[in-house]
Each structure stands twice: as C-alpha cells, then as structure tokens.
Image 1 (spheres, helix red, strand yellow):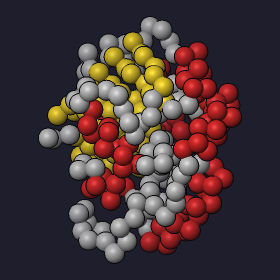
Image 2 (image 1 turned 180 degrees about the vertical axis):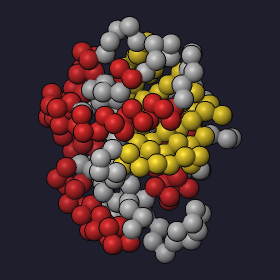
Image 3 (image 1 turned 90 degrees about the vertical axis):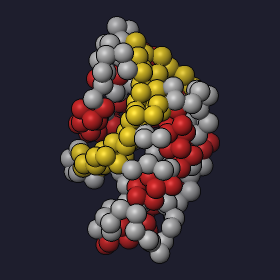
Amino acid sequence: MPWGSDRSDDSLSVATLDGNFIEQLYAKCASVYDWLFGPILQAGRREAMHQLALQPGNEILEIGIGTGLTTPLYPDDCRVTGIDVSEPMLREAARNIDHRHNIQLFRMDAARLTFPDQSFDVVYAAYVISVVPDPLAVLSEMRRVCRVGGHIVLLNHFLSDIPFLAKVERLFSPIATARFGFRTDLDAQLLLERARLRPVAMRKVNTPKIWTLVNCRRDD
C-alpha cells in the first residue's frame, strides 16, 4: 500500500502490553539476555550504526539500551545517553560498557522522557518499540527530544507487507505479548504517520530478514 493511503483497519496492533509484566520479564532474563539475543541480532545493530552516520561530537540517545550490546559500536568521539526501564538490565550494561566510551546510563520510562526538547542529534531504539505498552507515546517522545535536522532511527520487527503473513502476525500477537512480551503485528506505516515522521530510508536486516531498519529525519 502506498505511503499515506487510507486503511480500513486503523489499529497499530491488536495486542496490549502490561508494563509491569515487561519489567519483570527483563529482570528475569537480564543475566542471559546477551546469550539469547546478542549474536543473532547483532548484524542489525551494526547496520544501524551505518544508518546513524554519526559525526564527531554528536549527542545520541539510545532508548532501551538494555545490557549495552550496541555500546561497543559507538565512535569514541560521540556522547551517548542510554535509558532503560529495567534496573537489572542497566546493571548488566554498566558492567559491559568500555569506559573509554562517553556513555551515561539512566533508568527512565521511554514514554515519559525527562530530557528537554531538542536535546539530541540522534535518537535510536533497537528492538524496543514493539515491547513497550504505548509505542506511539515512545516514538512521539523520541521525536520531541530530537533536534530539528536530526535523526530518529528504529530497528524493529513490524507487521508484514504480505497480506497472508500479516494475518498470521495479527493472530499470533496476543499470544506473543502474553507469553513473551512483544508484539508481532505493530504497523510501522500507521505508527510513523501518527508520530508525524516520514522515513528517509527503510531496509530489511538480519537473517532471516524479518526486522526493519527505519531512518527518519526530524524536519520541524
């Protein structure tokens, strides 16, 4: 479907997520998260670094920094702020960070960021937007704290463009949220439209290529 066209179904997802459940889930898996989701998803994180096109002195906000799997990929001459709602995940990140990098960690709800407007050159979320209770609130906050001319980058699984697969993802999403804490049917097109963002680049990453790297520029 062309960008901006009308849709008969205007829901971002058929599933709902409970924030307390998500916090408990990540608290339990913090010590094994790198083993479960490190190597299999790292290719997408590397691709994202290319999309970020970071310049010396850039200020970056990483939403849902988790155990810090992205942190070794950042250039030394950038300033990185990482936030996560899970204290156990942040403790793992603090242990994993190479202290030659300029990285600060904060516990914070991504839907209610405490940073002033236009604080960062790049705002980045990897494998996060489908595991938060309110994706639109999170993406709107990402837009708010990004400077005009800066970039908002998402790395995530979104609802398939193939009608049959989309139906399967819609059917499976309530089960996935209840058991594993993530949506399988988040609609990228609607999400970006409602957050007033238009992608300048989108590409499939990882193997299999069921994750999408989305790069948006904040123009106003």
